[in-house]
Image 1 (cartoon, rainbow, N blue to C red):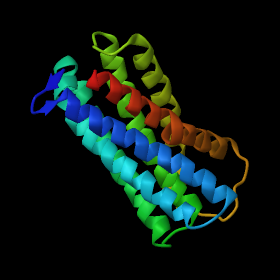
Image 2: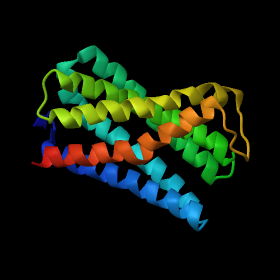
Image 3: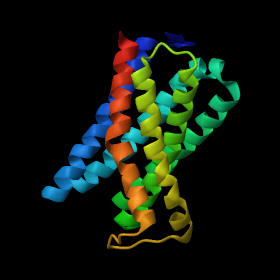
Image 4: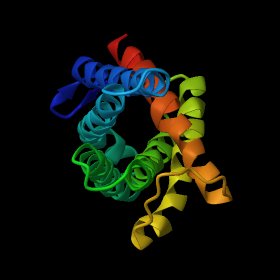
Length: 199
């Protein structure tokens, strides 16, 4: 597979790097909850790094995806870039102490949800004709749908809600569920996709 100026090998390596960065974020959040700092800050850094790498991956995959679905690919590209920026803003807000973990988490959930919409779009497009195995495409669709749950965080971002306590509400449970997508499922999809591209 060749997409304009990027070979499958280069795209595959970026995909794997994105996945590894995301899984390191998962390891670091587990270490934060079991040990404490500095693992929370490191987790925020890796979440931001994963978002940046995701934007690079989206941009690299765009030419090949664009030929299959021109309008959907353009819309998905813009949404994913905005999503990556929103995730980075969330990371910077909490690392700098500008906001608490809750509001920054809302930003991360919403931004990753936008990346999830891209993931849904690219895998939906791939369903019609792709070098990727059916199981990988299906896994991408499921992962994208779980990521997209984070869109429910947008109203609370607009209202600027920040709290030091997690309250069990339907909205909170939904956007926290989306974290399963960006901390585990999406990174695994990236690694599997990278391996498929390297073959």
